[in-house]
Length: 208
Image 1 (cartoon, rainbow, N blue to C red):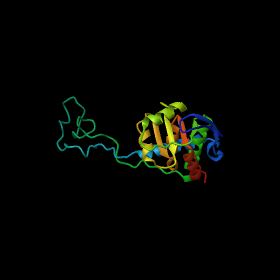
Image 2: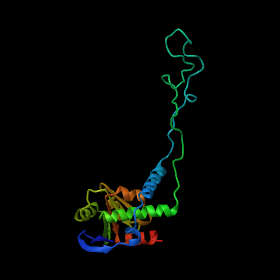
Image 3: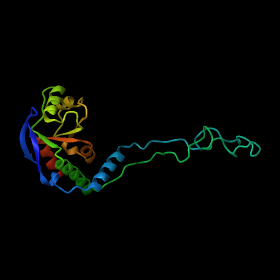
Image 4: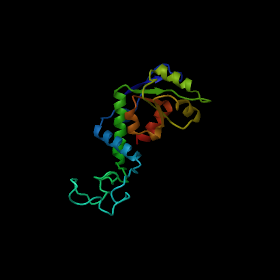
C-alpha cells in the first residue's frame, strides 16, 4: 500500500510505502464501532442528576380533598404528576466507562488505518518544523496538499511547542502524537497526514 509523499513546503514528491501490517488489513466494522462507542462513553462525566419526589421540597399535607373536586386524586404535591413535583425515572450519576480487550482495540485501530488507506485519504509529509509559531506557513502547506478546509488529522512523533502553536488555530485540523493515535480520531477525519517520523513511530508502537 502506497501513499503520496509531500515535501516540507507541501509540494508532491512521489509516493512512499505504508506498512502492510497496519494499512493493508481486513476492515472489521464491528470492532471499529465498539472502539468508537467505548471512546465516546469514556469521555462522559456521568454526573447528570435530577430530583425525584423524595428530593423536592413539599409534601406532607394532602393537596386537596379526595372527592368532590372533579380532579384526579392526589396524595402529595411532590408527585411527578404535580407542577413542581419530582421527576420520575430521571438520570442518576453513573459510570459510562466500558472496557475492550487490547487485541480488539489494536485490531480496530488497524481497521481504521486500512480504511483510510484504501480510500486514498493518507498522506505522508517529509517533516514539519518551525523555529517560531507561524500559522500561515502551515496553512500554506495544507493548501498545497489540497486538504485545507477538510477535517484533517495530523500525526507527529513528538511534542514541539512551535509546531503545536502553529496548527492549533487552523480550522478543522487536529493534531495528535503517534503513540496516542486512536480509532475515533481516525474515523472522524476526512484526511490523515503523518509526518515521516510520525509514521515510523506509529509503526514502532502499533506493529507489535
